[in-house]
Length: 357
Ligand code: KG4
Ligand code: ZN
Image 1 (tube, rainbow, N blue to C red):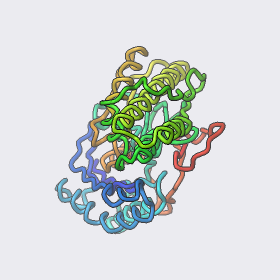
Image 2 (cartoon, helix red, strand yellow):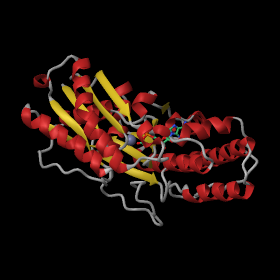
Image 3 (tube, helix red, strand yellow):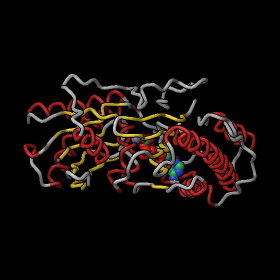
Image 4 (cartoon, rainbow, N blue to C red):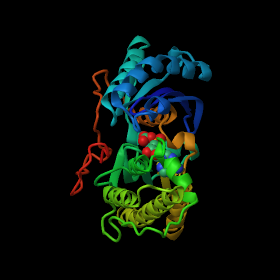
């Protein structure tokens, strides 16, 4: 089975061709990603209008490169998959419409993939992991703990009630005048800082649910930064280190609860899987390693290029759905919001529209 996957929900324009063999094994034939970071950097964050226009300009060329690199013709495709949400609606429309056009012209099935489902199924692309497993997804738009029970069967065990984790890193970077995207900058600055200099709050610590909250922590950093003005480089490092220490402790606590909730409902997970840009953070990786060891499960973090937004994960999710006969019609709608777990409700106090709870 050969599937073309298209991803345009945020600021990466991406396309890939993935092969799924009858035994479920996967092979990535091409995976072309063009990040728009430079276009958005001077605004300190992703500007939806700029993203949508860039997707229009870039996508045709990127799809053509992905097909060429894979060495396959459109007639050989078993399906074309696109991320149909959740995400910035302008970009979603560009990707989904392109996929529909290809599906129509080449008389190929269309698969409208939930972007979060694609993140959730990525470890099956890289290491043939069996269900059920526990996913920790932490990116610029999402912070969730999800029980991945089967293809199309996801139970959200925890989510952020306000900012996404990557968003908190980006906002802290911005208030300290570090460039966008802020996560790697904060991590770098934190390496030379004192994590004990500021006692920032550990939001939600000890709560019986597995939800996150990050906006109070971010505000605490802002208050401390304005109190210290003008900031010396050491202040910036200490603020970053103290912020990151609070995120680490909160993450370990929330995931420990999340894994306990998982165990109660689904038994021992086959693995704890981390995905999303924040999973690139080395301090967070080592905290996750400890959490997994304590819970007697294995930590799996797909390679960075497959952890962040890419076309291969969309193609793979499309292939997994296709294998179960789950295809869509050309009426499939683009969706700004699309819960992975249809039964999940907004958590109490949910305040942020970007977090996509
Ligand atoms: O998954 P991703 O590439 O894109 C989406 O948001 O969908 O995640 C990007 C986010 C940004 O907020 C970025 O600051 C954060 O991941 N990030 C990091 C690190 N690298 C990227 N956060 C903390 N530490 C990092 N090293
Ligand atoms: Zn993503």
